[in-house]
Image 1 (cartoon, helix red, strand yellow):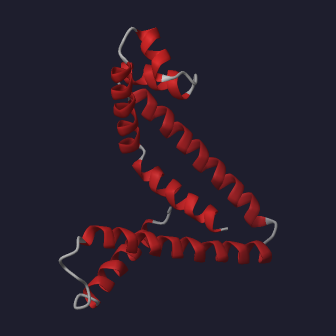
Image 2 (cartoon, rainbow, N blue to C red):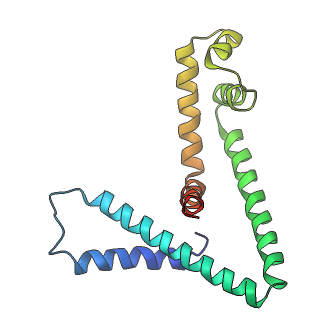
Image 3 (cartoon, helix red, strand yellow):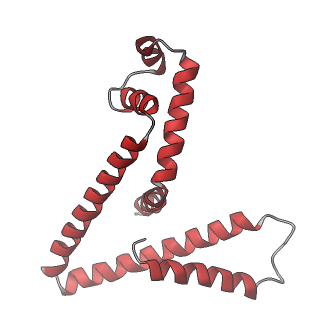
Length: 155
């Protein structure tokens, strides 16, 4: 979600709802999954509602909105691409090299191990490390991607 105020409102409303329903919530169960699911569902509702607004705007302003959406999508895509490239550059050299061979050159772990003169377990460890670091650095985009994938599946 690109609207920080909407994000704050959603989280605020989830906590407000939690406070209002405190008597009916089982406190013996972990609260974290409940909060995540609540925020997740409310974000999906928000995105669904925003989609309806955009569709309405497309009908009323058919020539203005598509150009705005295209330019915004291009900027978001180029920003994401530069963030990914930066995240890849921030990987330790060994991780980056192994990750590149696996993901961009399509080499199997055993092939990489043979080329680098290391064990398959070392390749697995380096790939795990690379993926963990990339997940951490790109976490804000992963959340957006996750919501986007759920929206596409719902269409």
